[in-house]
Length: 502
Image (cartoon, rainbow, N blue to C red):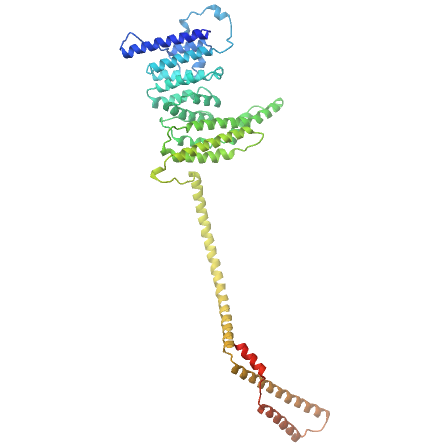
């Protein structure tokens, strides 16, 4: 079945082996017969089959801390190898896909019939062997549903998963260094409950290895915590990944003939960085793939969404010449939408009706520091404003006094104007006329005195006192006559004054 070149013959052999195994299991279960036993290939048998297909023994067990209880010499010791097969160096042109598929199918059949036939240590060895074979490039175009079924049976057959989980993650992660192969290992795992648990932990282990060059994440429990993924999101920025690739590129020695090659290598570094970022985001998406999302981790998922938008989405600069950046940004948008959909479908925490947005812890700390700084500045501004208010109040007091004085004078003027009546206006006009008459009298007396003085200066004669007294009395008489004469005010003036008062 594993070596025959004819597909039909291999299929018939597989069918016969399956029928024998089913009949033996039926007799064991229904008839309680101990005469029958299902033949299950051992790890040595599986190793020998893969070696016969051309897989080296070292490639099947590359880990030093995870080796089988036998060596390559122990497997070959009991076999008869003809010298003709060794002398004829025939290379296999095509991979024996049908042989490999038949072997995997029979292993699936056996592990489903006898799930407890292997111990946990043997299941770990089988997991690593099958996963290592699954990374072969010649299997890229082959169907993988039977390989996934075998891995599903192996994972479900593990008795103590809590103890075996760290060892499984460390063993599978150590099989390869390439981020694309690490993604493929995660995708090969089954979609069952245990398979999804293993996928989450294996994804975070792969992320830690790709970012820190060694696996720093060791799962302590089967239940995955989203808080374990959060520290790695800030390191997934394309700019940080590009910087790391550039430093590793420039460590090589510079040579004048290698300048053009180095320019081409540096030009492709950006694409490599975004390809690595895409793989890291795909692994992060697998780590958050919950069938039933636990409500107690809702807050952690909201923080992850904020970290994704803050560190990765804002760091991607799209360009028409770099469409691979748009593909990475599209993956970021899809993951962000998926996480928000999970948040919306999860019930609020602590029996609340609604979940209100809260800033991330580092933003909350920075905002509290800014608030304290703003409080200090506001206190200083309040003190300065108080000093200014005191100065302004002093100036306002002086200005108020001036305003009050002006207002009182204006009110007095208004009151005086309101108190004016037609009779009072007549009295005021008479008083003004008397003042005018007195002024005229004084002017006439002054003019007479000046005239007298001038006449005396012109004539050298002494003045006659009697004439002067006579003239003075005559002037006084005229003035008295004017005073005694009745003063009548014109009617149009009186009417005008009355209309003003009205």
